[in-house]
Length: 496
View 1 (cartoon, helix red, strand yellow):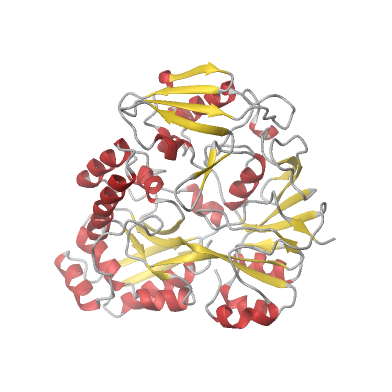
View 2 (cartoon, rainbow, N blue to C red):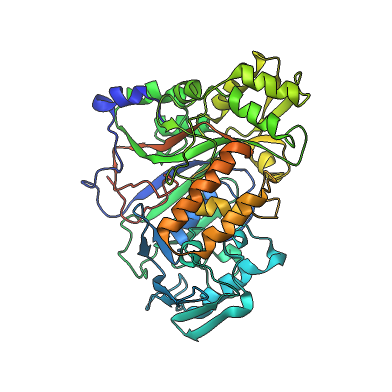
């Protein structure tokens, strides 16, 4: 993420906006993209061991049924339409004809069914099952090579939203993960675990062919390393930029800046089934300790807006006041909970810009009322290995609300990593997913967000744009929706 100073200082050295300019650049060449990623990395469309390199290469090699758009619609990819019966118990997916896999074989209903069966198989314990576990595997039927029918055990109005999740992507039936046989605009060229992935243009792609010859995704252990590589011209683009280096970037000729919408929420999370966070008063105290205005200014350099302790991109907002720091009330709540002299570790991988500064602000503010928070910075791989087991920890959220709710209501620790179960919230979630009426969904979301605000397990202090810095030689980059990251390289060109 980028400092607010960039807003006034970019004119001469850099430019900012929602996308990189479309002029210049010719076909061919290789784009080098830097990511902060775990040193433990596996290849394939599906893995529960994932960091940013996983998402970037998957977006190049594999495709979902459709891409969601900012206006709430869909840009069709491997599907061309999804329809349903009157009571939302039967949904039909029409697939795009003449789509080829990277090995030249035809994409068909068999591949779609194979992926859904794999994701739904509880033995595989895949994260994506959480998004589609309303589907009965026995109710998936092949109508013909380009048509799949889903028969629901009960009405499910959010079917189209759920199955177009960007992580539900399609590889060839029967292929091995290390083959990475998808339908995307790029195909696997080479892979070095924990270091880099190289993909090359797939000339058999069903849509407009990519202009680049290759994209190399290079993994770094920290934002410091990726920032230095960008300034040193070892990479051409990155969304992982060290904020303290932004003054240097501003003065560096040949670098440009691109901002997404306010889609990123860096979170501080509390596991609610472990002391001291089993007591809602302790959770509320932590939320009141956070100085949100200071966090927005110092951790995120004023770029973004204040957030209010609920998940998802900010729309369908509840009628609740903006939470502000209140140290006397926080102290009173902790005393009532018997935790006045609380000492606790807060673990972070600091893998998002502003994340480390955010937890440090919380720790400094807590000292003012006698609470000790020990910030523990960890290597990303080690941090992710015990995801869902930590008590006080950081994360980030770039999801649309209905997608975030899926994880929050899950009984699986890896999905519902806060272990938060609220009967009223979960009852509303069932109603949210049963209807396909957008206005009704919005009203239900407002009620659910109010519950999160009152008794949830997260501190969400600000909503921020994701900010990318890239070489002025690069043209055609756009921020992904809703993540804001650099995932779409299909229209990108680079000066030779």
